[in-house]
Image (cartoon, rainbow, N blue to C red; front, side, top):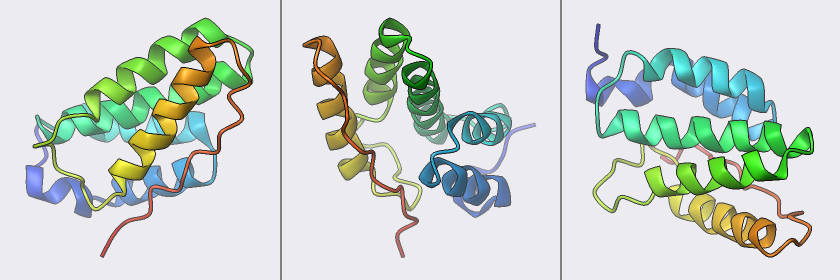
Length: 123
């Protein structure tokens, strides 16, 4: 079953996943968004996967797995970098900027204490 691409942002699971992401509930956000991801097709699927990978990178970072966090931040950033990808009502440019800063800090062996911005559903 594939969710209608235009309906992805209207799905209640999407709003729940975004809220959990914004609250720093990384694992729970991953779970909710992954359920939706399984039913979605590209290009929305790619955006959801990027968000999921960033959430899991945060989990790795919290658990002290710097290597895993670095890999997943890079993969998530790559999936969110498509210019033609839909923003699904999210502030993706700001998220990409902060994830990029966090990734560079990790790659340089620095403290990645860079707060991720809220995804905020844009009106």
